[in-house]
Length: 301
Image (cartoon, rainbow, N blue to C red; front, side, top):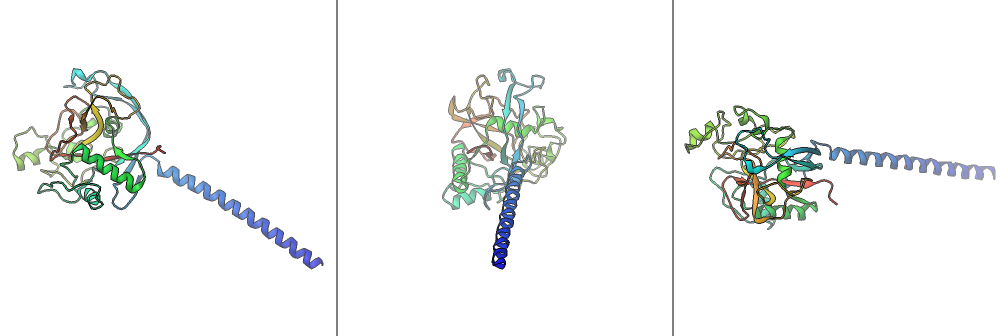
């Protein structure tokens, strides 16, 4: 009898130890999951949601004055006052969408074939893309990943392009050094193409578009924000900032058959990269130096 009682006591003790062990493991696993989730949304963290998906970079939340600073030379009077914008944490494509990534969408019947220029290869940014076609790509990504991929808004684009910089032109980078960061119309392009355009006093080694990631990223770890190809963004046409959202969302009222595009390209080096009334095109327009990159809201359900 004492032996049977002892066995029962041993069994009860073992069960209690097992429960305690399971409890400790559950607590540890929960902590590890929270830690992993926190690391996943730390600024600078990179991820991709599928093999064919773009690499995304987490951008920190912040606040900035949108538009060209009043002291900048050539700033249009119509641009109005700087607008204080609050930007929540989100993620953005580390690179512009490439030809290979577009082809993946085509192969899944989410996008249509496009005309490629002779110099364009798989890791070059895709161009000759209309705003409508760019949004079809984001729709394909949403369906493929079940995550809310989309185009950047103008406010998000400028925030990422500035990367804590404050100046309008090149965001604080000297024009002699911009070729380290951006593929623009420079001495190489003028020597090879001979278009007679004003060229920057530097050389990036490319007369046309360059493979994404070839040049240095900005302080947020994002490449080609002011060069390689122009980039479609979400917003409808609006000449002034008055009554525009201050939460970095897109302006979706106004002339919505005209959509915003931002940045610069291998074929240009505009004196300003900020919002003006010239930075809109018909949503069906295609240009050999106009492409896009994508964004992903991190706090979306």
